[in-house]
Length: 92
Image (cartoon, rainbow, N blue to C red; front, side, top):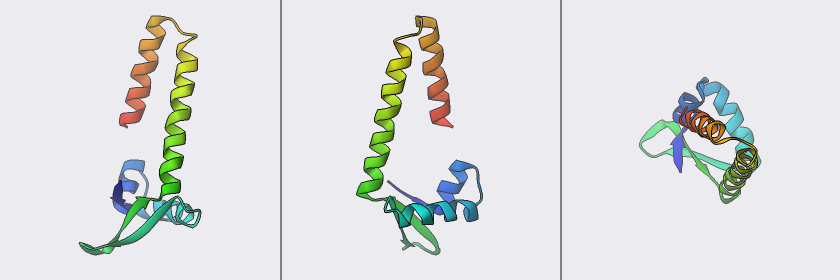
C-alpha cells in the first residue's frame, strides 16, 4: 500500500507537519519508507516495508483474537452491537 503524507495526515485528522514527524520516526525504526513522488516533486510517498507489513498483520491478528475472546462472553445482542461498533471505528 502506498499513500502520500497528505493522505495519511488527512485520514488521521492531523496536520502534515505532525504526521511527518511520526512517519520519520517509523522510517528510522524500519516500518516504512518515505520516497519522492515521481508525479509531484513537493510530495513524498509512504510505503510499508516488510517489517511494517508484518506489524500490521500482527495488529490485525491481535485485534481478531481480542474480538473472539470478547464475543465468547457476550450475548447475541451484545455481539451484534460490538461488531457494529468495531465496523464503525474501522471505517472512520
